Length: 234
Image (cartoon, rainbow, N blue to C red):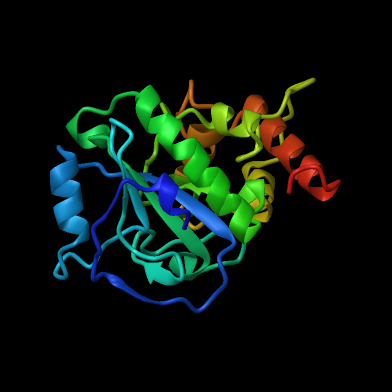
């Protein structure tokens, strides 16, 4: 951790030892009414939840768990074969009331604090862009955060996440099973297929999240897999 990127340290007891090296960053929203409530919960031993960092709406960055330790932010999750996402990731909580308490856009001050912190983490741990993900990507049946208002394209322009592919055509997979297999191949848990489709849409086509497979998301998934397989989407 570069201390110049952090405004304060509030150690959380909710941590243990990593079993895997860091290869991912998972972005969340706090989903609580206030930052104070979220911080209190992440420092409560009874809650058994935490994150490495929390970024308030005014840009204040709080460090809660050292990166060398395993924070408890992802819960039961999966991404690209990894089932212990907590061990393999750094978790960043963005203060936002979330869908339950009045979901709203992420303020400029918050994004301006996130970008250098994320860039520092990605560089130090050599995290692939494809492994900078949302909580909804790794737990599609349970989570929606950071949600459709999060500006992934801004991260992509700085090569901190994958960009939404440019499409030349729509692509309809032969059947839903073929789409699900391709979705699993890209990295998603497809145990709940409808939830996995919604998570994919939330990340790659946030303007329409209906859980239905169509030619637009088919083409997006095809392009993402093509870019990965040709080495352009690390």
